[in-house]
Image 1 (cartoon, rainbow, N blue to C red):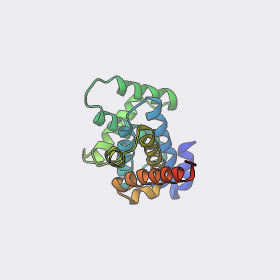
Image 2 (image 1 turned 45 degrees about the horizontal axis):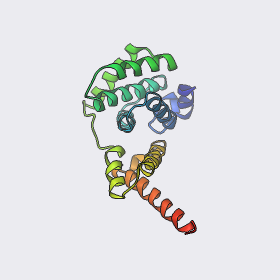
Image 3 (image 1 turned 60 degrees about the vertical axis):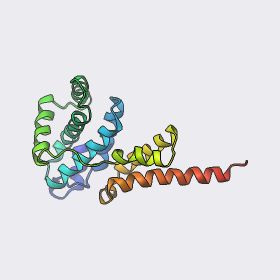
Image 4 (image 1 turned 90 degrees about the vertical axis):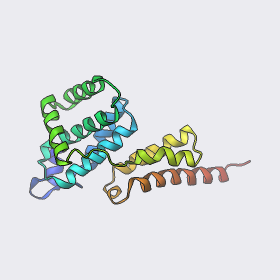
Length: 188
């Protein structure tokens, strides 16, 4: 149980940014993958989630609402081109999977936006990853692996300390080093 795990880890039963964060980010990864949303939605959702939690004390029972509201904000921001189909799908999926009420998610969305002073957009790992992969002449498979490495970094709270450009560069560099080592080890 997510709220119980977070409350057990936190003194006084209050959530702190490092407690249970990986569980919630994992839920965001699952949600964006299940709905086949763009990678940018995931990275922006985690950014919004982290920034909100850095400035707000929160009841552990509301953590999942914050995560879903962050994903909703990111989806609306990234998918400015069209319709509410994906938004409705997201709200329905969260209601079905986790029993969250649409009204609660929308209320939390407003709370998160107010706490962030409606400042949603910040550079994310995704903002840099494509450029770095292109500069490194990565093919599609290598870029996909670099994105996977960057997603793994989202699960770790240590990633907070590093700017998104550095995390993206590290993912591409690690993949490049791996590919170079694999090429050197294979017979001609």
